[in-house]
Image 1 (cartoon, one colour):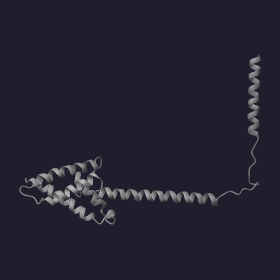
Image 2 (cartoon, helix red, strand yellow):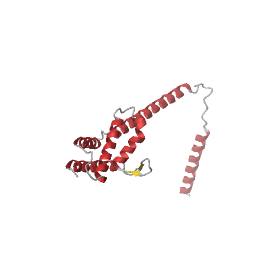
Image 3 (tube, one colour):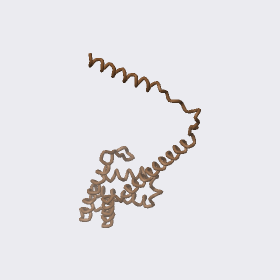
Image 4 (tube, one colour):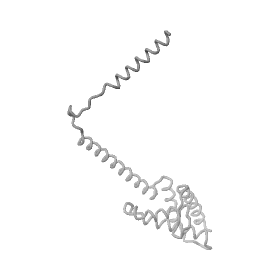
Length: 178
């Protein structure tokens, strides 16, 4: 194994570990139904999110192809005998991706933020229109404030309450004076 390949492989393991941590607790499967982890899971998510994200990220396809190439080089180094197609530019691409992952500026992180901001703005606009609708409903459905439509308050509950208090007071006084 050449030094370039060793450097690439070492950096790849770091990238793969970060991706494993990012997607821990979630399961992703490739087209063959096999469970995938690490960078393979990252690539799989890019495949499933492609149609939704591609319009917002013109670089989506380029990033996807670059990551697939980096994974292919890793597989070549790990499983093939002889020299791989790994070059210093591949280490540079992998290092750039590593840095993006570390500061959450990678393409999936940006897509996630965009998705969340759209969801929040949709929620906010739904709440605002619901409030506006509620205000309109209140103003358009007010009851007429006619004296004829107002109900008279009954005095019977008050009288009954006062009578009960007086009766209890009389019983207490009678009991104490015996």
